[in-house]
Length: 456
Image (spheres, rainbow, N blue to C red):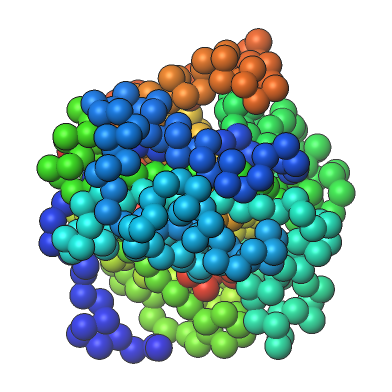
């Protein structure tokens, strides 16, 4: 689609408010042989039901549930079709109805969207969203090929069945168009690995320098190992409810004021150019001179129309005028450092061509204007694909509730996962946090959701 009709840009609305009540997760690891998938999802769901300061018991909450949404990227990893049915049974929700959602890397975000639609429409009043991925039962090379099959097998697969190769091409084009130094991308990796150090759930924490990132082994030029997300095993559970149910369950639910989705062609070369879809903080004047340089088209090969579409709808639905000013915290889908900086532009943190300014200005850091990926993101903490978009919103929930320390600073949580809390532990609770955003992204931008969570 190049030209929008009057109905295409209709802003969604919920027929009744949707709230996020509780969240839970496991830790995330490269391998988790001691627990099977059903044990992992049960652990995450038990945490959501029992450890979120709810006003009801876990059994009372279970009896409120009337629909379930399950999130798993690929049946291939666990070699189990209809895995959601098995999980549903283990969690004790039979014979209630359920659906399983699959939209690549955006599966978690799309699952939350499906649950929100059920609550907003009145179809359901209490919906657990349960996501997981079992990525340790196949060799890494095979796992990479499974993931890469979420791109167009007729064309992109010839690049080597590895997503890093797809994004490396984008990185090269983006750097050419916008003259972005490698050091800028390295700063994103350093930040996200660094914040992952303060999370007991994280898989890939670390302290690095720009030199460490630039001199690290190259996966696909120019992306190094430290600039790529991790393959993970783990689970996450989120509980959504209507307003009446939410306040019966909790004194402190957060309002999901918007969650919207966008898509784009699976094959990146099929993406036709169009005028830039303007966000509320942009005008035609914003891009008056933009196409006079090295870039002459949009979205081209270095922007994600799906991200821009999802943000356009969600911002207008939630009344967001300027994301940097209106949001207090942000979780991006940093599958690679290049996709992170692309997202900065797609969601309007900076105009197209100027995404580097967001990280270089320092605004993306804790204590600054818009702290981004305090969770450690996909690069530092996890990418158990079906759980990822759910994990992001859980991290927003705990920040908005002022409970980040409760779930990250307790030494017993670290011990539970066989880890030691760092001696230089730093609280990443964002002071006065009232509104946050999470971006869940698939493929080379084939599906994206944008969620806005806020204090009611």
